Length: 158
Length: 190
Image 1 (cartoon, one colour):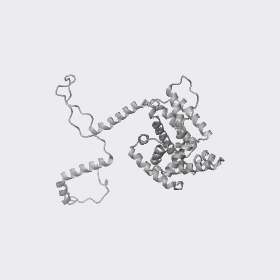
Image 2: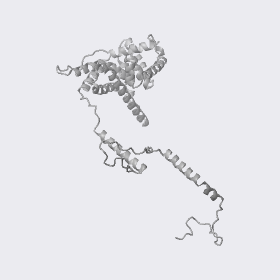
Image 3: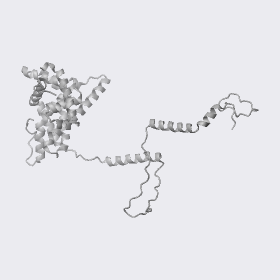
Image 4: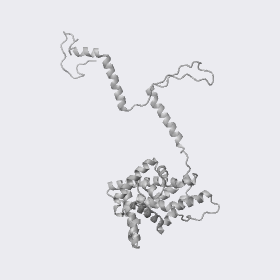
């Protein structure tokens, strides 16, 4: 840190004090006028703007709209042990903990989709292994002449 | 803090808080102006920043008077930062269109200092003041704020930290770097 006799810092402090004392006339007048204007300004009340509750409600509504499709909508809770009309003040049974419904970013969604596809592929690995050994024209009746190469929709009669 | 007189005679019925506010603002306005001038490098901008800070400070009038200096300079720091950012954006926009920023180029304060005849001591002081301003404005913002509040305004470490919204340790770090940079830039002051 600085030493007390650091000549540069000492000079900077002394210069600042001198300049603060030696404000020229026009600047001093301007400062007085601006102080007068500032004090004449009615102080703004520091309270929450009127639109804060509205924006909070809008945010909550948006969160619900985004949350409903992801979870399939709110499910009906099972009746509490004491019935729907349990004793007043009784603690209702808590639903089982649900999986977090935090909105995933696009990359996370893509990764999750890829994981699901891989799991399905592994489940049907035997089928795909067999499919790879079957020749392309297998299963075609032997008395049926091979169709000429056509476009994807040519030769189809519906 | 120098004690300059109130801007206008307050009526005898003026609330004590209003009289205290007037006295307090009168006592800090010149130092506040010089701090803003060093940070912004422009007289009118500095005056505007001080007035904005005064108006915003009135919202804290109910706080204990012992907290007023730190609160006022905290508000002033914020207003200087706002004005600094606004000026930066303005310069960039003007640069896109190839227009020179006249407010920056023609600072009436600089013209006044250059043209006003005076003793050699006053000229020397003006030159040193300009050099200090240039060196301070070349610093990163946080370092400049720490130096202005702690070294020049004389706030305590805790008050400076509160005004800057950081820890005292951060203030010490910013201050140390600012002092090192200023020593390098103002080496001819030795």
